Image: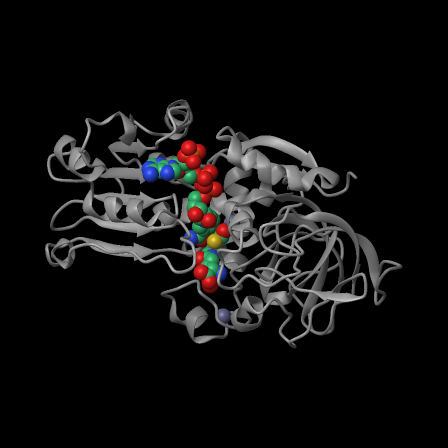
Length: 381
Ligand SMILES: NC(=O)C1=CN([C@@H]2O[C@H](COP(=O)(O)OP(=O)(O)OC[C@H]3O[C@@H](n4cnc5c(N)ncnc54)[C@H](OP(=O)(O)O)[C@@H]3O)[C@@H](O)[C@H]2O)C=CC1
Ligand SMILES: N[C@@H](CCC(=O)N[C@@H](CSC=O)C(=O)NCC(=O)O)C(=O)O
Ligand SMILES: [Zn+2]
Ligand SMILES: [Zn+2]
């Protein structure tokens, strides 16, 4: 038992006060975990585009003030009554997609979209309806059930998993979202071996899909990105070809070009941009009769996708995935082992590092076109 058990901890966090404004470093109070809750000392966190998306005000679930962050790694500081799966000292990754093993989704065997804490998570509070964070006397909302931009955070016990303590948390924190999402999105799909794959957008998510497609032995892997600097990245992660839509002749649509060069379309396509026009292109670039197109990107509130229904009538399937279909408590420790065994890349995604006091600058890094992932050392201020 640590000497902070049962007490409020005062620490530093990057607080998002209002949409469209940079996060600021603040002293926050973190209440002890209640029953079935876990308080975690966060050591490292990645910054994902979804954090930027919510900070921008485009997320219909965005609540302010809040503490963002959902790609964290840390050590359990204390646990509330009834917590059985993790204990103080465990190295853990918080899970924005919970896994209770009791709800209809968990029991279905068909989906990772556990419902147990999803409603309160979307409202920015713990399952009892209250937050554990305070700043300047004011309640501060949680985000995605994780809030890893705080040196200490409280999560539901169904929203955390212990991993091999040998794994470096400054790297495997990224398995809390981007890499796992991408990896699961492609490796869980049946039929990828020997097939053709198109990946739209080569950020962290797209690179992860490329890497998973190569792991699954896809025969032809085409990366599509408007940023020419992504060619080298894409090839390093598994692309056999790279297409820049801005290089096509005036008026030529990317989906038409891809259908031409693949003799009818790709077996599997993935949107990794969050742009609804790209989602359409990805669907229409998939093969007539059997193509499967997966939406991974998160589009802004109010955006909708469209295509001619004929695209579906003629046998294409449009689907999507959250957290790559991965059940966090059951499957994430295995992914950490896969990383340790050299089966999946993780270190290679880390292009930028920041200390907590500069976390806001990590958001700027994401917009410079050179950043795949920025990892923040939460212990350094
Ligand atoms: N479903 C889920 O569970 C998850 C979804 N996401 C979402 O996935 C999306 C991708 O995330 P991430 O990889 O981090 O994002 P990035 O912004 O790093 O990567 C997107 C890439 O797509 C490129 N791009 C932009 N426009 C186009 C276009 N028209 N055609 C082709 N390429 C284009 C960008 O180029 P440039 O650099 O020039 O802009 C960039 O290289 C985000 O929307 C994120 O919110 C993330 C995690 C989990
Ligand atoms: N809150 C948004 C939706 C955001 C979203 O789609 N989140 C993804 C994960 S993105 C990670 O970086 C997700 O898992 N969604 C499933 C879920 O249950 O949230 C909105 O309201 O549009
Ligand atoms: Zn994310
Ligand atoms: Zn569940």
